[in-house]
Each structure stands twice: as C-alpha cells, then as structure tokens.
Image (tube, rainbow, N blue to C red; front, side, top):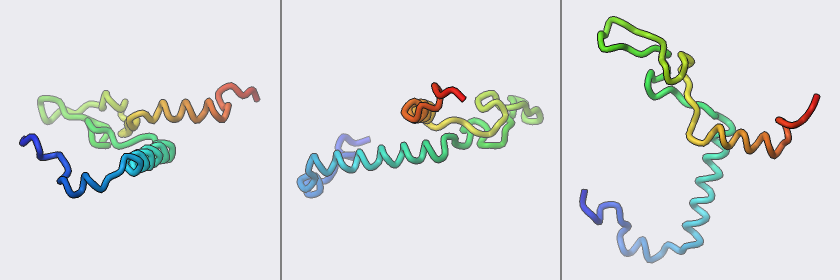
Length: 96
C-alpha cells in the first residue's frame, strides 16, 4: 500500500475543523450505542448463522462452538453497553 493512499487530499483536509471531526465521531459513537442497545447480537462469523460448522472432512458437521449453536454472537462492546445501561437504570440492584 502506498503511504499517501489513506490520506485526505489537501483541499478536503484544509476545510475540516477539529470541532466538526469531534461531532462526527460523537455521532458515529452514539449511532453504534443505539445499534448495540437495539440489536446486541449479530450473525455468528464462524458458522454464518447456520448453527453448524463443517469439519476437515466435509461430510461431517458439528454444532458451532463459537455461538453454542445459536447462530448469534454478541456485537463488539455490546455486553459492556448493556451492563452500563442496566447500572444506570438500577435494574440489577432493584429488589422485587
């Protein structure tokens, strides 16, 4: 990969203010938190949601070990986001 391949062209970089970059990053983070709260799991990357994986011998299949044969895997940071959400709402410490 060339060194300047990921760099912004000079005309675009000169018009970006640091405040705008921070706002865009905050908007992206808020969007990911909302996504993690609404849909905390994603399709399992190992079995692609099929719940089984093939062994070296293609005729044998076995339950997926990564997702415990559910077909779903947690999103990045979703458990931490949910624990924080429950802590704020006091749902874990609330007594019935």
